[in-house]
Amino acid sequence: MKKCIIAISSVNHAIRCEKLLNQNGIYTRIVKLQPQKTKKGCAYGIEVSCKDVDTTLSLFNLANIPYSEILR
Amino acid sequence: MIYFDNAATTFPKPTSVINEMITCMTTYCGNPGRSGHFLSVKAAEKIYDCRELISRTFGITNATNVIFTPNTTTSLNIAIRAFAKKRSHIIISDIEHNSVYRTVASLAKQGIDFDIFKVDPYDNGNTVRNLRSKIRSNTSMVVCNHVSNVCGIVLPLFEIGQLCKRFGLSFIVDGAQSVGTHRIDVTGFNIDALCCPGHKGLYGPQGTGFIVLADKYAKESLVSHLSPFVTGGNGVNSAERKMPDILPEKFEGGTLNTPGIAGLYEGIKFVEQKNPDSIFRHVAGLYRTAADMVSSLPNTTVYYKDLPQSSCLLFNVNGIDSDAVSDRLNDFGICVRGGLHCSPLIHKKLGLEKGAVRASFSCFNTRSELDLFYNALKSITFIG
Image 1 (cartoon, each protein chain N blue to C red):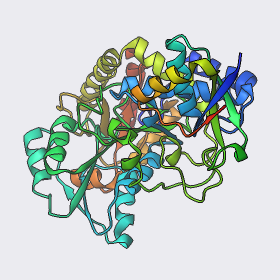
Image 2: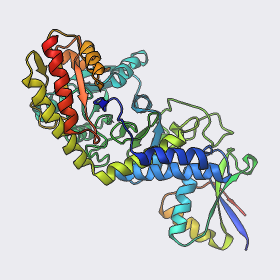
Image 3: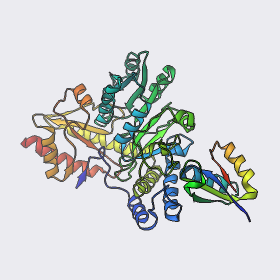
Image 4: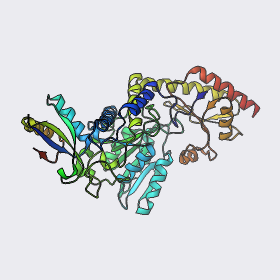
């Protein structure tokens, strides 16, 4: 299954995302992103199945969770 | 040994606090928010759990609005300096600890002036009116404690919060002596920043403290106006020179105290299980008994004895310096604190330039300890 990563600036917000997604039945994993993968340097990411990206982003928007990029 | 210095730091700590700190240091004490390995993430998750617990306890919904610090003084420095506006005016009360008094006074270099309002321990209406009379056109902030660290004065946070709301003032509260025994609703009391210790009424370890920021500061646009007191690495946007405008990292430069926060998490759960109202009833009951005991002795003065919400005893043995009384009680194995308690304003208010003796209680203290304290003090008052 293809995985996508949604870049989240901080580990705290990544944990918040992980909890939110788990509550909604979406399996996730927190990963550390290499600095060159994002524009501003160190960041974390939430790894989800690419088929769940749209649902994930809708949940983030509803919960006002900021994310920077989607790495496919 | 009898420990009556719980306003300085509670002792002993619950076993669950100690056990969790050991578990943390032996099984998951990675550096939170710095790496992607499981120890780092596990440490960050434990810290986030503590943020969630604190946010629920103090009436906000955004766990990321909880900022960890080493102690209340650091919390107050961060909050006051973040909210201070150039050439503005700040109001503090006349019972503040030096963590507020010195911090506000140090802002004079930035052209920030301050005034002190008089607290009426017996009339909250007077207290609020006294505060109101100090508000100027350039007043931007009110900073005050909830409960005095010296005696049993409790400030009317709700009413002060309403006044701040009416005049558009930031409201910063020093919760050093009230967390764990008094309910504080950051949202309901219109508090912008609540500054707290972890090692006092929440029974966590020393080296822990935190700030609870109102939910509205979850918006980047509002956080961008607040300046960080400590800058440095926090694992976020490391390629940039500027601290990121996101919470909590904007105010958390440097590695956090993971074992301490893990212990604090257990301390807060301990308080919740015991119930803060029950803990308050217990310490207030000890206070009333102690106040009656001390005032029954000759040559003693108990200050603010009749305040209904007191839980902290302040007294002097006439003719003996407070530190000398503390030393003599120490000879009996009883720990209390003499002197000014880092709070010169309230000692001035009471006319106690030489200070007084403070006995402060926790949920672990007992009535039988008070009997031993009474007998020791009795011998001091008779022998001199």
